[in-house]
Picture 1: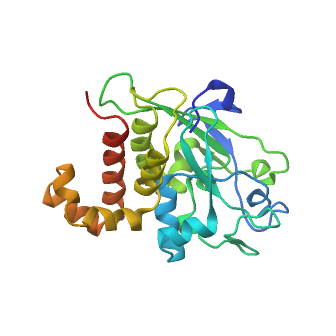
Picture 2: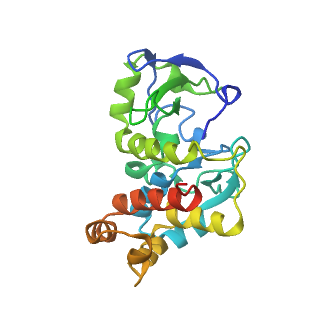
Length: 246
């Protein structure tokens, strides 16, 4: 999560600003952007990668994710574990093997999106985009021009941004100490409810969980049937666990 101005780079763009970009297999740099990079995984990214790989979340996390603490915020975060050659484990000669479910950082390239809470409670978050200029990216020299809005739509980012906006309310919670310092139990709860959805579902559906946390039957049923509803429940549950109302 980007929290400080120092973490941002590149030209600032609004949704209707335009840029030139097209990535395709004929470019000499094709697939090189999938090597030697820090590739963050947000909770909705992990949800989608489960669908792409057919792996349960414990196996997916063990095989393809690494845990780190965000230096500015103290939040635990995940990134893709690169192979011995420094390449993303999902990239193949022909391109991305999980393309339909690829993470946010891959979809939004060559942009970065920064968000902050809206000016008033309940208002949409404020967003801004930054155009990256990675050295060696030939896609930026392609003649195709499109707006930021068109790129967001083309890359199917809407559900990713919606889920990440919900995460923003947790990450930038007004009761959060800065930097955040989680104890072992809180760290386990964070990974469980945001990333390890298969185990979290088992916990949610276990006898006594709903009664203990006051969950209505309809919400419990929805979380049992839908990964998206389960992640939404995980965010709400974790918020109550880390920042209980006083």
